[in-house]
Length: 567
Image (cartoon, rainbow, N blue to C red):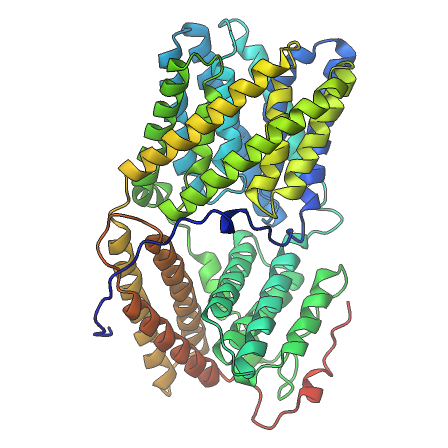
C-alpha cells in the first residue's frame, strides 16, 4: 500500500446551474417510454369503456412496473420484473390494509415513511433501478390516503396484479425479435467509450474522467453479460470477446486502434452477426482465444452475495429516508395539506449516494415540479373534456417523462408532475387552483425537510469504505502482478486476476466519488486513491501483455481491419 500522506477533503460546492444542465439522451430512451404507454393504455381504456375509471389508479400501479429492467438481458429481466411486480403488490397490500384500518393521518405518514425506507434500501441493494424505489413509494404512499374497506382490498390488489402481469409481458415482448439486444447495447457502449479513451491517451491528452467513464462502461457491460447465468450462447460468447478487447484497450491504449473498436461497436448495434475478434497472429477458435473467456466462465459460476450482506452499508441511507419522509409528511399535515404523501414522495426522491448528489436532486425536483404545475394548468382544460381525454393526457405525460428524464431529472419531472396531478382526478375532477397550490407547497416542504434530514443523518462510514476499497485494490494488484511475473501462471488464473483488478478499480473510484460528496467526516486519502489507481492501471497493462492479448509490435492498423465486421 502506498505511504502517501492523506490530504484533507473539501466539501464540494453545492451546484445549482450545473444540476440543471442537460445531458445527452439515453440510446434507448424510447424503450421505457413506449413500454409504459403500452402497459398503461389497455387497462385504462378498458376501464373507460366499463365506466370505472375510478379504479385506474390500481391498474396503473401494476402498469408502471414496465419501466424497470430495460438494461438487463431477457432471461434476467424476466426474474427482475417478476420481483418488481411482487414488490409493488407487497407495498400496495400494506398500504391498502393500513388505509382500511385507520384514518389517522400521522399513522399513515409513519407507515408511508417506513415503507419508503425499506423500498429504498432493497432497490439500492439489488440495483434494480432506474426508476428504483420512487415509483414503488409513489404507489404505496398515494394509496395510503385513499379510503378503503378490508372487503375492497382483494379486488384492488387483483387489478394491480393483472396490470402487473400485462406489464411483464410488455417488458418481455422484444425478446423474440432481438434476443441479445441489451447485451449488444452494453457491449457497443463499452467499445465506444474505450475507443474514446484510447484516442485521448494516444494523443497525449489522457483524462482521468474519460478513463473512469470507460472502466465504468466496461464494468457495466460485464454486469449485463453476467446477469444471464444460463448457458452462454455463441452470440454471447462473441460479445464477451468484444468486451475483453475493450478492457484490453483500457489497459494498453497506446497499442489500440480506436477506429477498429468503433467499427465493432457499430456492427454490434445492429441485429446481424457479431464481428470476429481473433488476433491476426492465430487461427480463429484456437486454444489461445478460448483462454480469454476462462475467467468469465468462472465468474458466472460464482453465486451473488446474499441480500442481507448488501443491506448493511445502506443503513444510513435508509435512516435518512425514513426520517426525512416522516418529517416532511408531518410538516405537510401541520400546514393543513390534504395530500401529505406528495411531500413524503418528494423527500423520498431526493436521497442518493451522498449529500452533494442529494442537493442536486433537490434542486432538480423543485424546478421540475414548479414548471410541471404550470404544464398541468395548461392541459387541464383538455383533460376535462371527458374520461378518454383524461387517459390520453396521462399517456402523453407518461411518454414525455420517460423520453426526457434521461437528459436531466428536472426535465422529466416537468411531465411527472402533471401526471401525478392528473391521476388524482381519476375518481373525479377537483379545483385546479387548489391542486396547484397544494403541490407547490408540498414540493417545497418535501425538498427542504428532506434535505435537512440528510444533513442530520450523515454517512460517517464512507471513509472506512474508501479504506476497504483501497485495500481490495492493493491485494488484487499484488495478485495480478505476481501471476504476470510467474512463468507457470495459467491462462485462467491470469484472466481471473485481471478481471478482479479491473472490478476493484471501478469500485474504488465509485466509492471515492461517493465519499467525496459526503459531509461531516474525516479527511479522505485522495492522494492514495490516485496513486492506487495509477499502479493498478500499470499492472493491468503488464497482465494484458503477459496474456498475449496485444498484437505484435509493428502490426499495422490495416491488418486489424481485415477481420469481419459486417453485421
